[in-house]
Image 1 (spheres, one colour):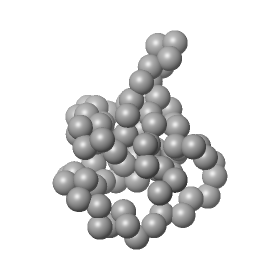
Image 2 (image 1 turned 120 degrees about the vertical axis):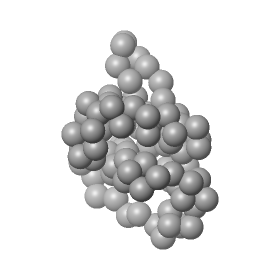
Image 3 (image 1 turned 60 degrees about the horizontal axis):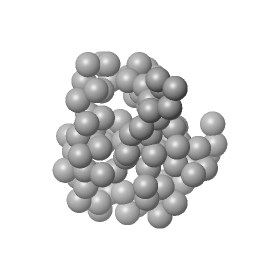
Image 4 (image 1 turned 60 degrees about the vertical axis):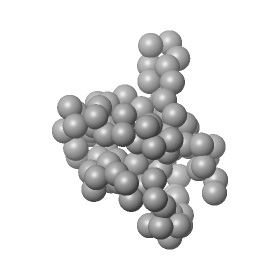
Amino acid sequence: MSNRLIRDGLLKSEKVASLPIEGRWLFLTMLLSADDIGLFEATPFNLAKDSDIKPGVVVHLMQMIADADLVRFYEVGGKRYGYIPKFRQ
């Protein structure tokens, strides 16, 4: 896993602030899990394991994060992935 620099703009983001605290933590987990272009494996099991949030809650939070357009999810070969559109900003 790569080292990441999390900018303080994350704290000022209205989209992030609109999420419940567990959603913010899950989004941070996604940021830290992403590769250099903002792609990451987005299976609820792995995100739940990495974030220490219950899998059933993770599924709901993933939808909230997608609705805020912080992450876009897609599937390839039956496996779910995520893309963070503003990853490099």
